[in-house]
Length: 155
Image (tube, rainbow, N blue to C red; front, side, top):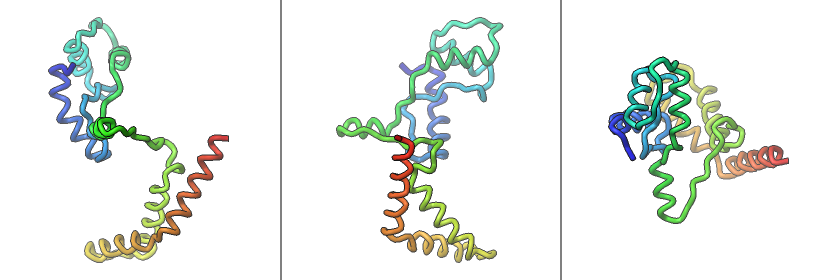
């Protein structure tokens, strides 16, 4: 069930998520957080028929929102589910478990060593060259490294 508040927030939330992570397009709304104004939190609670007292602090109101909010549903997840698949996520707090972060770090290092006040056109070329220089063998080596780290965490 989508409330009026949720409808109003949906567009803003989708835009925010697309900026943060283009794969995470939210079908449902993102609930107000401690960063939201107290009146916005109250409006959300009221529109969703969740009772609260006017004297409740912002922290208490956010707790009420959290208790009454389900996990967001992402468009990509729904598409995968419709086709018999399930999305697996990398931990947001363990970049050491993400081979792409290692590749990105390597590419940035290559650009940084050669970039001494280059014009934008040359910089773009340098970025492309740095990614093209990462061979499948280097990528596999980084993936193997991540697997070793995963195994250490599992032990």
